[in-house]
Image (cartoon, rainbow, N blue to C red; front, side, top):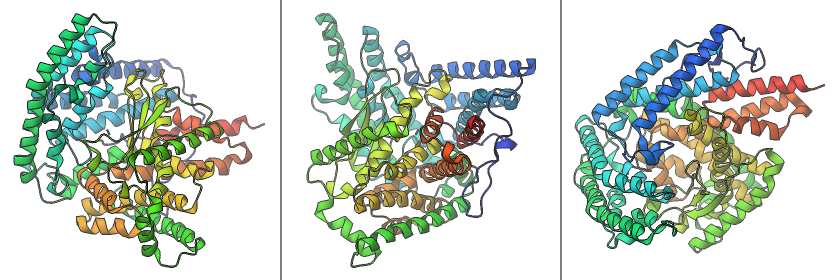
Length: 605
């Protein structure tokens, strides 16, 4: 979730409409695939393929825990300053070679590959060059929490898998030491996460250090799942080694991180909240905007888009209040929603059951709107306890690529009075289907795409699709009451408010209290959710902008396709065309849908 300067391709430049919403590009002048087959074109395709294959080999060697054949190399990544410099030099060299390849000499698929690859390379160059690696955590996630999720994704198929897992556990102290050293350097230069969002984050590390029985540690779980077919002596040997590594290396490493967070990092972190207050802060924030939105928009432009969307959505919310004949103003209605017991689950299991019921109702509607559905299934589960107090309302946790595991729609059951049921349909549509699970599941099945695309996730595309899925839910008949439809709108309002408060805090001098008040005044989110969200935006600049800007792009394309194709518009084909891309910059979405409309028009008798 997973920093860039977008490649300058004049044919894909984005402007602004009078309403300050990113404009759609002009129609493609020729259908997809009508590039020539000259020797120069063939040479460009061959050079591009050789470049991205060479880079992919570098990535797999550089981050072995993410490699497709990870069991062959048991290291965790090297995150030292020397390794960062090596990466920077490598990707600068890749970018120079990429600049020497004309994307217009590639076929339609190759041009999309080029856009995705260039986006990835530019993000990496900007992140390292602006020292983003000195902040390996935010209020939502951290390097030590990510390592604690590794066991849940680990399955032993062979003894070599177990050997690799134990070697990785043994490498945790070295990896943590490097991350802590980087964070100390960040303290010295002012490149830190704001202190205000860090309270209690040391507990997330201490939790894994304080487990009394090794068998209760999350790191023991893969050992508890060892295949019964392995010889008992072999299983016992792995178990004995794991006990020693977890108790003598992993738990002390987590204890050291917890102590560093508590004694050094949190007290020494900066007291300002704006990205602009970081070293090279304006460049940093613009790089984050480009990475997460894939658009070259200024903070001022995004702020205005947010204000316009807030006004539009507020009018729709007021119409529902009026239809309900509620006796009170907007603030009174929000208070009513936040305090009425009937809108809240009484137990965690009741909340989970409600989410499962909604999920199955959505499943039944999918064939009407999608021609292709993923093979991978998904389940509904609570957010893990160690991160739930600081976590958002829900999230999709995908399965490891190539595994036989399901995806998981996580629902946060912590602090039930902050989890209104009327928001649950929108959350489910976004995180499960037709949102993240559907998009991620189909992306995984795009086997013909280069490896750098199959595992990619671009926030503007993925989160824009998730918010579009919430909007699509109304057409699908998922919102059954005015309150659930109001919940949909408050979720959309939440994403529109992000455009205002993120740019407000990071570029316009807003205080945290002002951002909190703006969210209270315009959304029906609970106080806990509002605080969690604002702290997320403070520590993760730019990411929250991707949802609404991506959704606006998809909805604009749908409106354009319906307007220009009329009765020939096929909603299933439209959705399938988008999701077949996997995850791409919005420029690539523009290029693809422009060509799709032309193809659809040409097919009409």
